[in-house]
Image (cartoon, rainbow, N blue to C red; front, side, top):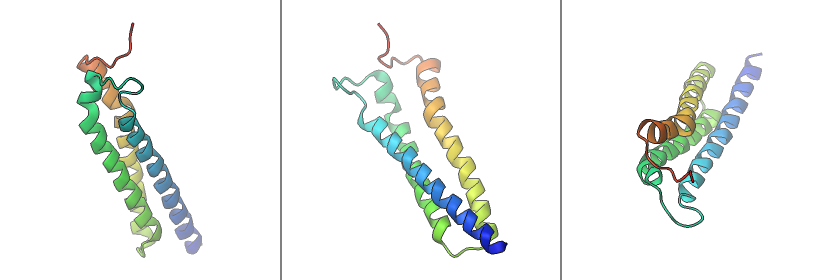
Length: 117
């Protein structure tokens, strides 16, 4: 039974590493495609570049964290606690990336994001 728990936690860590990789690639493409298709960078693109870049590198750190948790020879308790803390942290980072940044820069500060007529 203990071996099954360790294997399950390792698989969940690997799945979380893949999810973090997808989040990091999505954040990277969001930065890469800023100004697409006419190369015009809006005020929002300019203001949000550094925070988006920091979040992207944080997500790459989560890829590394979950990958290490999946393969490192640590106790099952430490792996489970690391997985739980990492999951909570990556969910918070994803919420800031998808909801917090647009709300802060567009709604709260009123920076132009190029959408409109």
